[in-house]
Length: 171
Image 1 (cartoon, one colour):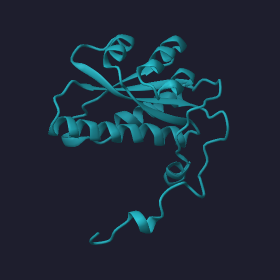
Image 2 (tube, helix red, strand yellow):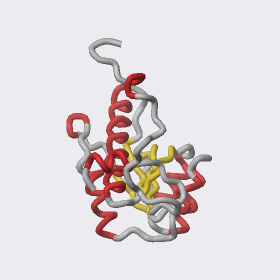
Image 3 (cartoon, helix red, strand yellow):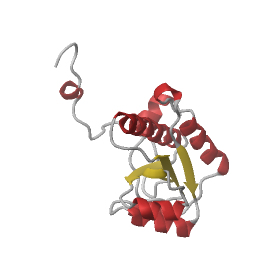
Image 4 (tube, one colour):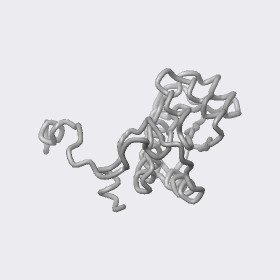
């Protein structure tokens, strides 16, 4: 798929077909995450890939809106250093947002759906993922083939009109 098509095709998928993701496709998605730009090239992340069904079920309990994780073929946990609120944390979160989008676009390029979830229970996430005490997991990205319609460019996305969101030179 071309980049423009992947951008137009990417959507949140939270219902997945019972189908695994090929190792080479999962590796490609993770390579896209690894290559994501970051502030001052700090690369403040680690990625924990989960494919074990029982562990995916456990991860689904870390937040009330993460139930789709239980049915994903794989879920990528984005991990960062425990950081106090402030500029450093803001920059790391921005970088993780970029990594999230890289994961989602690489997945869409392969016809794989994705859906993100925040992590509400850090202690539970730390136990499930066996994270060190100096790490936390703010975001999960569930991956899998959609159980309804394939990942293809969306001709009429449910978005605000371009003239409402783009301001040129000034507001």
